[in-house]
Image 1: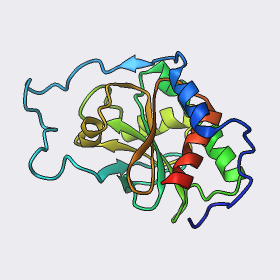
Image 2: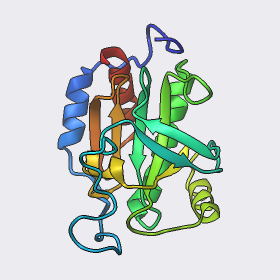
Image 3: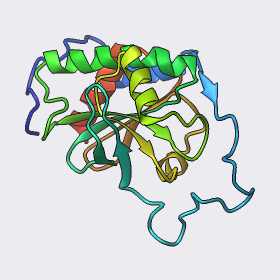
Amino acid sequence: MDGTRGTGRSGFSIDRRELLASAAGMPALVGCLDGGADDGDDGDGGTDTSGDGAGEPPFEIATIDAPGSEAGTVQIPQSGRVTCCNFTRTQCPTSRGLLPTLGEAKTRLENEGYAVGGDDPAIRFLSVTDATSGPSPSDDELAAWFDENGGDWPLGRDETGASYEYYEIDGYPTTIVLDGAGESRWRNAGDTTASTVVTAVETALEEG
């Protein structure tokens, strides 16, 4: 894959699947449960997109101006590109605490020679909030929160909540690594380590 380094990326002596499996089995700081539905009626809400194709990937995320992020749109998943997608919430302490960890993972991958970010990256980091539920910060408030907590990659909102429904996000933070074919290769609810994120991304690159 363009933008990746072929050999000698991590030097781990432990098998990657073993590392990911052991990390998944460890107790984690679970973070924040979804505190409830949106303010609309119970039952069929505005995010019910069944039957019109909008409930299937790819999903369009409206990005904002913030450190490492420009106003526009991005899609998840992205064909031919590994995406580390962080579903986050501003009022969740564990969500705040995870951003520096993701930043460390991103820096490690960059230092190992991967193209992370830019116009045609091999790897894309993305943080997403749900515009249909929970806190509703302004763009400026969201950008300030992201900056204060070490974010430096695309940041946006799922305006319809469709990606949240599809990936069954019910707690924060939830982080998913998607391979270039859009398959979920790793999923974690709550806190994790930079090493685990790096391993998950590299595995998706190699096996996706």
